[in-house]
Length: 258
Ligand code: ADP
Image (cartoon, rainbow, N blue to C red; front, side):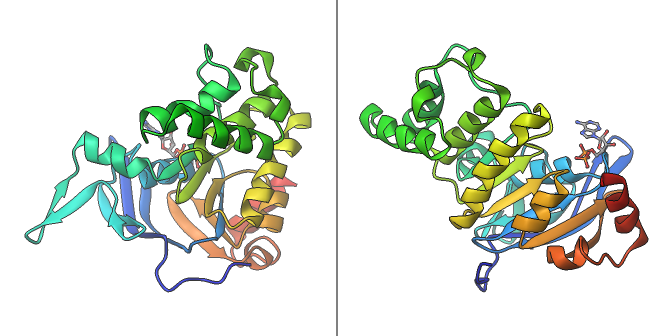
């Protein structure tokens, strides 16, 4: 269990978001402290992915505020007024946040190693030698030391997802966001990806994970947030939210997941 720092790394207050006339986030609050693992659980369509995408400006929020490491996401204050960041400024903010998607989105024409060194060289300006050294370490860390020269098509889904995790870590993010990282995988490949995530958590990586893996959340999360219909129904330690849920909606969701 991590020791909470006084200022949360992620501080979200009353976040709202609509698509057209449909409000999919109806005032979400969340604090995530450095080193914490937060799992977002909830039925399909409850707004989990949308909320995750708002944290790194893949979606623009309509109301509320999100701060990451003290910086307002997507906005800046000038003379007491809020202005939207430019695309360039948003890209700069996003650099500090790693994201792993359901679909691995690797570059198909690049080897595993090339996929991992691409952004550190191009975006962070690292030398090829430094980026390669670090990518080699990261691929080793996710158990793919012998797969560096393979192309995505030569790798299993679980291996591709582990490359995607290494690729995100190569940018030295302050925060890792995982959007259902195992839900596109064959069941026998889920465990190897969860094992890597478990290790990241044990190493103190700050992580927000949208997942249907209740057992993983129970074991690894410091905080479980159960969302339904665009609101947080309940949040707290897994022993409470999963082990002893207070709300009927949480109970019936968990019963369906068994
Ligand atoms: P969850 O991750 O909990 O399954 P989502 O955040 O993916 O939920 O979706 C919440 C709701 O928002 C759903 O009704 C979904 O159809 C809708 N939605 C998500 N993205 C878009 C989009 N880009 N345009 C329109 N509706 C969307």
